[in-house]
Image (tube, rainbow, N blue to C red; front, side):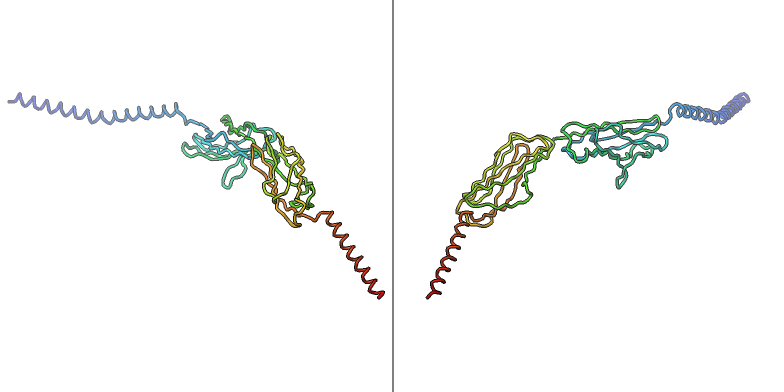
Length: 305
């Protein structure tokens, strides 16, 4: 009986020391694991510093327009870093004679420097504007412009392309600028007009006609057509208007038209005033003189009686 009690006491003492060792060892182990974790985190942080990256985003780097148009490219900037940073903006390459500007803010104004906050989601919008030489129509083709964004050793560029297509346009106008003229019935009356290519490319197949005129009138053009016309060139056109001899004097409407293969028509709405023929004018004068002479003879005879 005493032997079993002794064994029982020994087991209780052993269990007590086991429990005591577990309580003392657990905080030390936790502290050791914590220290190991902190060391590992610090080491990872030292090995992986914050990444710095500048990105230029342009959804539409190629823009098409007619000759004489200006081109506006929407550009967005994204800066990834540990802190805000100032960047210089510059156009480093563009067509000779063209005008460029960088716009930002609202309302937009010209800028050359921008401060970017470090972010991965929000983009900072700016605009690159490319304008042709003032008063000129550039030839059809591709024109490149380069935007550079830099800060210290960080620099990014983007190339933007303006595609210029030909602008077909021509003018048709009178030599005097007036839209009226006087003509004599029964005679060929000459009236001067000009056609001019005011576009950026040559036009072909130019012809002239009258789409509206009184019945019996003859209207012809000299020359009546042109094979082609280069930009800036002008050609005088002699318009011959011949109303019938018996046309009643007064005002009449005439439409002169020119057209080309590459572009729409151009019209001149002309008011034509028909005058009495010169011959009939002299006949009228002679009749009046004859009447006056007859009256004079009659009064003289009556006076003698």
